[in-house]
Length: 86
Figure 1 (cartoon, rainbow, N blue to C red):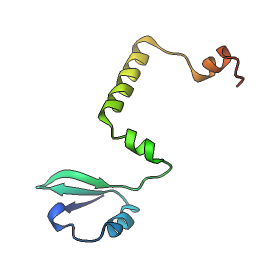
Figure 2: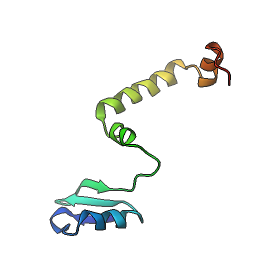
Figure 3: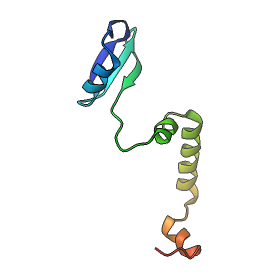
Figure 4: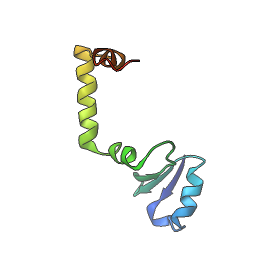
């Protein structure tokens, strides 16, 4: 992982994107993490967008908590109930 102070980040974005292939680049502002340049593998635009959406993440967390408390139905069982095959 590489850290770069925002004020000193003067290279083109393409340069940082190339370097990010080796590991995340954390951009810091006044010594605190501000942004990150990380490679995206096997993800589409929507997945990336949702992975940073706080409302969506809260929905997922509530769902996981409820599943832990109450249990759930597996996708295999849903397919069986809907007679969709395996």
